[in-house]
Image 1 (cartoon, rainbow, N blue to C red):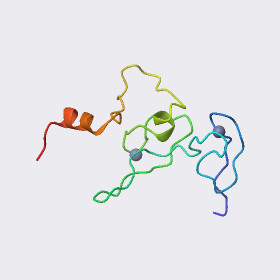
Image 2 (cartoon, rainbow, N blue to C red):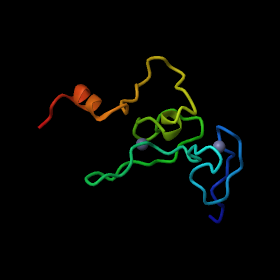
Image 3 (cartoon, rainbow, N blue to C red):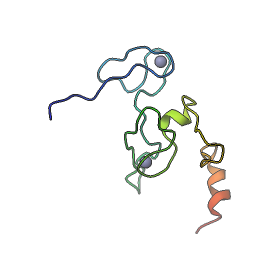
Length: 98
Ligand SMILES: [Zn+2]
Ligand SMILES: [Zn+2]
């Protein structure tokens, strides 16, 4: 397969990016709708590259970068709510696991 990754215009301002750009150089929006599950020290993360219209990762169900940046909104009111507004929310959701 010699086909390059397809380039899409920025979803926010429609600027066409350069081939290797990961963020829009005009408005800072992410250009690839990757999973928000970044690799950490202990886990490999997901970083799955989703469709441009995916609000949640097709692989693991975490919110996608586009959703976290407010570029797309989930279609369903009762979809998983992102819990990235602060670390303390994780404690509330999962309790004090020690
Ligand atoms: Zn932009
Ligand atoms: Zn994922």
